[in-house]
Image: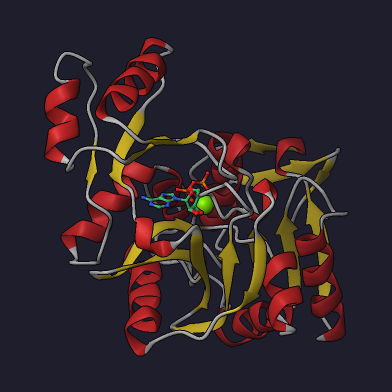
Length: 301
Ligand code: ADP
Ligand code: MG
């Protein structure tokens, strides 16, 4: 097959591993920087051009769209879909998963366990909002934050109020969430491909930190999942419409709760802590699934 990995940086561990495994599987593979793609939009024959060349002949793409380029990146993915190229994660699913509020609403609708979460536009009713979600301690998050940046733990209602007002004063959209203390600064990353959790790791925050992000100094070890955790992760990915997803769970005393569903989950932490060939499993999935024109949405939405 002829596979394109849509990624800004071919040197990243995740990108390199997928290239390696695609080559090992006997495929042609190229890394395409989405920000260097330009496109023509016409009803007859949509095209994508790249550094002066027209891109044709791809059977499948693997989008690895960073959060900071979601808008243009998903437009490039959508263009491939319009051309009938199979995308392992579709553009609509990627956009959906990037909006934390929208994701939580979708998951809630299908009965997935979630931390009690509130959000508001106006700061006029902040005290009431804090009461509604159960009061401090609370976690306050920027809606479009990643890697733990923009996630704050507030120990008192007063602190929560100040942080909410400060963020809203900066015109940032936020959500306010019950703090799952019993998680003990750990979360579980479930790497989902298709309808299976193929690898999972427990990430533990460093001393004095509640955020378990590896970028914030968290450390990863193998996690053994309960059947309920496995089912929750697979269902969450399915609800988001993602074939490849990193579903992050917290172990709360009311069962597993989903914190977020990531559409470009990193491979380094998960492959190193589990010693599994996750990149290879992504390529295998494409081999089984990719058919011309199989993208369900064909770029709709
Ligand atoms: P980001 O998208 O920046 O990674 P997350 O929502 O994943 O933001 O939060 C970062 C980390 O903070 C999580 O990995 C988790 O360890 C911790 N955390 C987030 N929300 C909660 C919560 N409601 N209760 C306890 N810990 C939380
Ligand atoms: Mg996270």
